[in-house]
Image (cartoon, rainbow, N blue to C red; front, side):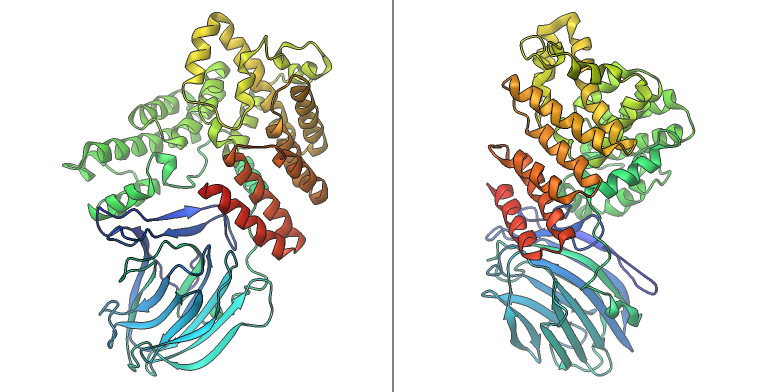
Length: 531
């Protein structure tokens, strides 16, 4: 979501009643530019609808420019997008001014109270929409482009607004599913929402949009932040602090969302006062975020020990908060407590495709200093680290680790556990250190050799095939990266891993200008997601 000069934006994703099963959430899967889009998922028959709604100062004169992009997974499912005024979404003056929707697989706009057909919508295709709304005239110009095509699909001028009411003011926009009939199971994505009075908004170049950021870009950004000293990495979603999309909706209904936003922005608040009388869960989350903020300030100031105390308090309050665990790992590495850092890092194994995991793993490896043993293991055919009988922790090379596996292995292995854990995770850290240093050929070769050794031991090696592909991607050898990702896909049954690989192949298609393949891979991803 973007804002620019003379634009106004306040975004809120919410469900309206407790029965709602839909959601509004951030997604890294499909996006036009930047790293994320907003996913809107409706559920038919749940008595509610999810909504992304934005408010801005009421405009009663002049022109308003509205730009956004959307992608739907099923055009037959209803979605609705609108600009409206103080009378909300009523067909009257100061009510709905602009209304775009899908009906039976076609995109329509409602002008002069009449739904007018535009074109048949394709699934998994991005469409860019530009609206220029002339408030005194009560009319608008509408331009819609399909990704990859220069000529617009729609170029209309002087269209009467939804209710044909000149001078109809606007102060909000809305992206929803089926708000009236509760009949839609739509899942669609919205990106690059910009609204304002600056005419440059309508000139945004969707044919060559703001560059989409890839996982390799995120690694570089996070690496830059950690080069000087350990510091907290940015939050990327509510689950970083243990919140779900439904939690955000509940916070909004209880009037606590703005306070949470402020705290997540680093405000030095007094969480106890902010949530006095609230449910104990909210009190715990607010207190955890406050502890994390304090820890981040301490870590940035070089006080790793004090930072660790704050991070551990945050994790104790909200154990599922990923950001708290990542920050704990950084503090422990700064204190040279590598065994503890390894165990905390392992707790994030399910998020190994988060670039923050990769960067933090590399940071731990660099802080450790001596990684020669990781290379020596590959030179030694009898190395214990690659012997599944001698090292049961090889199961940790899978993409996800069952929550009870670590405690079970600790109990079984006793005093041998710390050493086995250390030698197992150092192999991973060695790989990430090569990426950190820009030694992409070395990282690829190491990953390929690790994969081969694991296969000879009768173990799954797709994770290391993927890592070899990542290294090729980093050095922009797209052909080799594609081949390595396809190798990883063959025989892979883990839907989580398959989804990641489909998205990486889609990124390669995007960089290669192959939009049809990119679209097909989006469908593969979504199919794996919904299985």
